Length: 321
Image (tube, rainbow, N blue to C red; front, side):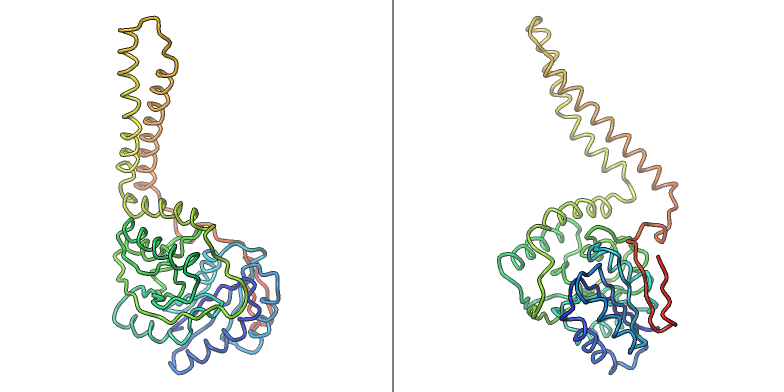
């Protein structure tokens, strides 16, 4: 199998049939062996039933159904788990990503890149709630991770299967895949892609997701910068916590010398609390160092979202995952 295209859907009944048609129109001229994986992320509308009908008439289409809504990253992870292609392409299911751009990704991958990222240079979204926060977030992500991608949030990306299958995906980590892949020295390229205005349905993203991105960014910074030396990271945090403990201890000693009868409970409490935090961080660093040096957990052992895969082209068998 040459190519697998993975498309998560959540309440996109108005788009799924057109998405299938445009994918077929984009991939057929390539003369490559391809498959399509549609992931229904617990939709409450007719998305899954329409996907089922499409799969009945197209043997290249497989459908994965989640029992409830898990989010875009787990949906992509499920598709990646079941993909059989050498090159995996992911994209949104709302037709804002253009399937006609897929051959451009394949051409770029042929130059030896491991990951090709789409850049929505003429993005058709709202300025205040989508474009401006996205530009700020991409700038911050580039500075923090050291991987200067212009559009981390673009779902239209292409990966070599042997690279992406080794990267653990959880939370909203799909936008940080290039940063995670940089740990293994993967070659990353970025190309301009078309971006269409949403024609139907409702966007699943907004300003409410900013805090999630910030938390994930902290996690990614820790992984990228200190994955091989966690004791340095926790030791640095412990040193920062030790400063107020030291200052409070010195102040406490001076207070006891100059004002023997003065209450010192608050000062002592601050010194003890920050001292305990310092010790805790250092011990956490030692524990993480031991886990890194001795741990041998496989990526496939990491938890994935519970789902069902339904292959309508093989006697309608249903396999619980």
